[in-house]
Amino acid sequence: MPYVWWQSEYDLQCHAFPLDQASDSRSFYEAVCEHSVPDERVSRAQAGALCTTCLIKVGTELPDVRWRV
Image 1 (spheres, one colour):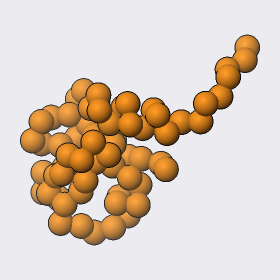
Image 2: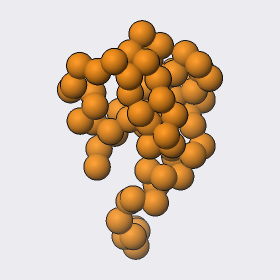
Image 3: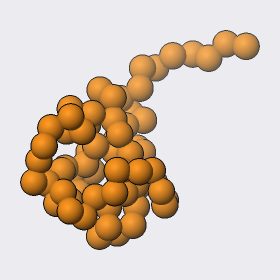
Image 4: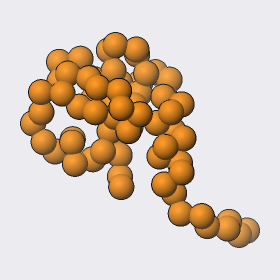
């Protein structure tokens, strides 16, 4: 599933939010790490540190592909 990385004003970290949430008008958003942010507290920009838990959860969804040179 594709994600957008938005910054939460609560912890000033960028969290991964499912892309389908980005197209909806919502009162709050829930990141893959279960961090919830109300609409007025989310910055729709990738600024600040990335959430480690989001990175791990998004990374584990990547296909196991052997890289070749």
